[in-house]
Length: 284
Image (cartoon, rainbow, N blue to C red; front, side, top):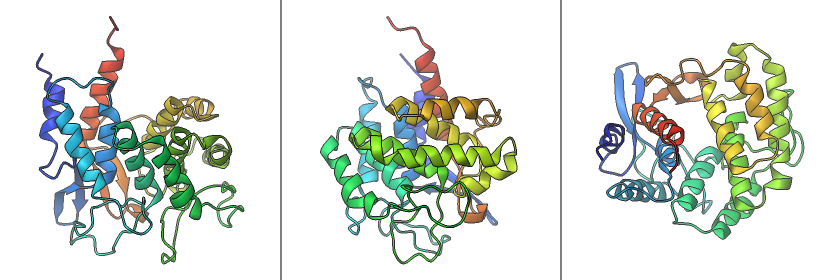
């Protein structure tokens, strides 16, 4: 059966295998091919039995993600493949916790990795940067959370609540989440306490995201993975009405620090709508 939404998703895949996003620069919008959006689209396309012809789309996307892995630390993933960072982004981007979590989950769910490999990601990659003590700074910070960059060379290494929720989902999928994700859940709870109903405060708790709905999407993924406490956090998030505008194809997906550069992705929005439609269909 012809599926117009799937056709649009396939058309939004670059020859590299990446799913396209748009970046708003001062000179105008440019297309971008990055691991972050590609992993998020793959998460929406995951099905137990892909329809004929659709598996190749996902396999090429997984190939792209594999090229975003860094040698040091092994298992760390960056926003772009090695040597493929665009010239307009002058600062080299090292591996980070958000891309590492999302890419690792996509490769696991896509059949490329075993659960043992996910455990390697936790113990050998992410735990090297886990903060055992409560860091100074924001009042919602908690012990046991993860700064953004997997690098000791970054002078500024912000803690992003949304990225940490994605890490919690990885922790749960690896089978090591019970003790390690507790600090993340407590941090999200404390951050939402501080935000209250003030939307302008959301940027402070998730500096690499400029639409609050992305925290809702991350919490949905955490609930689906079985992260303890994520369902209460999602219910609290839902009550605030922060989903408004999130289905717009031009809605921002992520941003640089300070929102100087903003990414959107029409193909990701199509994939999300496609998944909602699939879940709403009655099962035979």
